[in-house]
Image 1 (cartoon, rainbow, N blue to C red):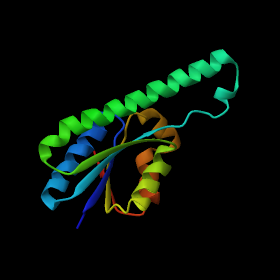
Image 2 (cartoon, helix red, strand yellow):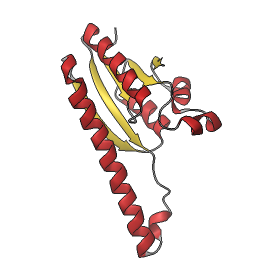
Image 3 (cartoon, rainbow, N blue to C red):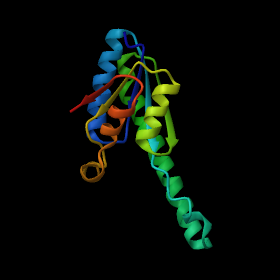
Length: 145
């Protein structure tokens, strides 16, 4: 039924619990899994200023990229025990939009994600990423608490 499962990861405990659930599901259904980490894009105007600010922008950019790649490497190591075919991907953009885009363009059958991630407080004010994905995804979304 679900042959391709998309699992967004942000490094939070709830995302990890969702990933474990997704891997159990994938194992039982002989599915493949893509772990996706979306790094929120930095404001584009920041790197247009002086050398000091541009340097700080580049340092922050590099650090966020390295953190995203580290989250993906940890996921690969931790979940290889399930014996499920998995891939990892790190991209930049609006997390909810990019998750929905990946689900559609990659023709995923299911998105499995945590109910709230690292942006928990912000989610109360603006609506969480998971809420936006549920409303706009092109496939079923399983929210794990």
